[in-house]
Length: 331
Image 1: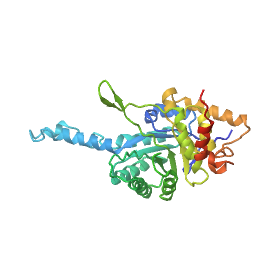
Image 2 (image 1 turned 90 degrees about the vertical axis):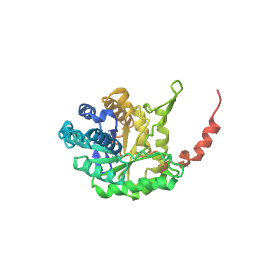
Image 3 (image 1 turned 45 degrees about the vertical axis):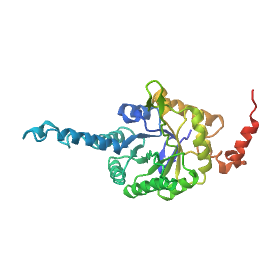
Image 4 (image 1 turned 135 degrees about the vertical axis):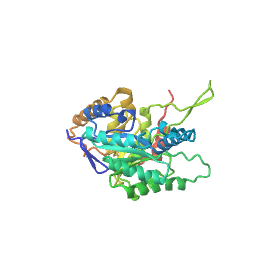
């Protein structure tokens, strides 16, 4: 069974990608993910904000009582020895790239133009085969326009694209007013791949303590529907690679994403629930589905149920909404 696919210029042995999570931040689980058969791995994001906050804390600590005596400065480690900055992350990129044969894709979340560019260059130098831009931006300022949000994404992408030569993917938000047009704009700006979608974590409220809760919730299978819709719309119309993300709990979900046109299928929650070895279960289910229908490879399967190739393309548009309402029968 030939499960090979191409993702942002990288040849993968299969379309299953372990996306960014605590599991992909440790060498032992990275090796387990490879042993389970993953086609590629995305490391957790390097957060510029976290690095700068750490550096600020160090500066604050070393500034205390520095005038109290001539040897006061010797109480603190030299900055170069304290590993302030991206050192640990870059070391993870290097060690992971050396430890496994599958492509290691880094992830970056910056907050300034200089940060995006500088860290992207360092990540490339550390040996990453690709870079995923995790633009996690909530436009809470009520004066920010939709066009300004779009331009922010495009400016970041263009800056990074001009700074590195490795393939660049961008995690696309589902909240743009015209996702298709934004996808085309990102393609024109130099993206090699689009990841659909970045899953923003919404807060909850603790009614007893009257506090905001920021706990992590795993994705659920019903969340597949939004990315499934837009992958179906974009597939066969875009030159960039398309990555499906969110709601992958079983091999059936993997198959659905491939049918609508995804080049790769990323999963995080399923691996956190079941462990790194669950990749093998997903792959076995995918291979069994293909074999049962006499498919020898992914090529004839990918995109056969995209909107462009359906006899009834309106099934992914408003007509489907009307049919769903008309077809409902209260039990």
